[in-house]
Image 1 (cartoon, one colour):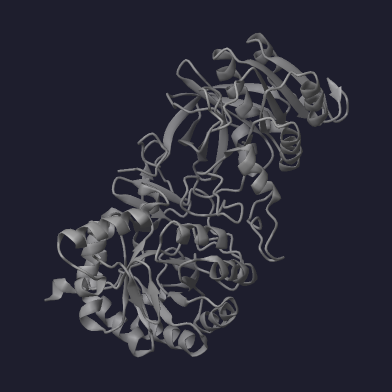
Image 2 (image 1 turned 90 degrees about the horizontal axis):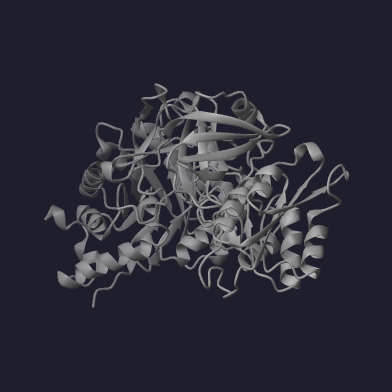
Length: 305
Length: 289
């Protein structure tokens, strides 16, 4: 019988599905609920040192093949975030990944050091949010040197293993992957949203998002995500959380064949509800059963052979 | 594909609609009508987008003859802007979203109760979704009473409309300028003691809802409660409106909850002092379901 258990660094997930950062992850209670609903691991919304209000509404809009969002990294600040993550760590049946971001290398270290207080199972370093360029300059993830600097700064202070989340919006993702792994990254999460993109309301002749542009997610970006995971797997030897447009079991299998150890799910919470983790797990199970695979591990990276 | 979506199969993208009618309901309280087949149920909400300003959630206050309305109080930057809009002006609308009040079927609230005397308890601008509910209840032959409470008489709304369709309308004002001098909860207790309440549907400020909930529990009456929250996305993915230890999201799991769930939410105590759920930005912009 197929076994969905997934070894990821020092933990074992009950199945390969992971709640991606930015969906339902503001409060500890939501993270716990998603874990109870079947996610193998859950990731918080990105946390920063200081309170940020984010952008006014609309912050998200749907198009024919996905979603475009520009929440603007709204966060409640480090103290509240520590409480929420602590609550999740204490109550979640699945491992908890705390996502962090900052405006410079020093603050990445500071926020990571503080988040130790909440004892998350992993820390995910968000160097790839595409929505805040005007304030922070280019995302860290577009430059191998900056990506490495952030990674080693976080690695120095974090008690938990470090996952670095990469951007697809680069000419060669292998270069970035190699630089963060050389700098000490224990794992990679790929990809963050694509773009940015824009949706214009043709009646008012105005972009719908208050930020005008936003990161593109959902089924539209799946081929980009699969290619990125494939590239990263061919370049480095750390586990990968493959994220981007995964909506059903077939999508998840594709990610695993490309080289993913675990599979992130975000926008699909919209398409299939909070039960999407259980549904995708069941679909993976059925595929494995009919194709005679017994473990996730034996499927990993098969597309490379 | 959209198993989790609640948007009648439409994309979660604003549809531009002209305002076809604006009606003054009370002081700083206006209804905006749209010519669109929304197919909403009482208690559900839409989001209204004013390009360049913001987007906020509002309860549907009526739906009839191909029109639907939202009724909005001017309480902050967005709603003040909305009150400047005139017939012919366009806004972007998404929805309907969320759960709704249920008043038909043999076991519609899970208690098996029949709906002989439906009592609607409205606090302030919380009257909006209950007007829609009253119209539906009357249409189904349910005897309906509206207990509407406001600070003062200028804020009372919808009396004529409700009385014209046969709803008993009982006002309560804080200053006694109209109706009962006191709280809606006093009027509710009185209705219950006269045997004129078999079910309660309420919408209004949280303290009022908590007291109404306690009364419903005491008298063992079924109830449904419309809650409100600060919201971002409005359709269940951003996680900003989670309200309790179960990760219940007001926008999608609510805004209308049965009595038992509502009481659990009301009684939720913070795990620790920092476990805060409401320190979001524009708190001044208190919108109404």
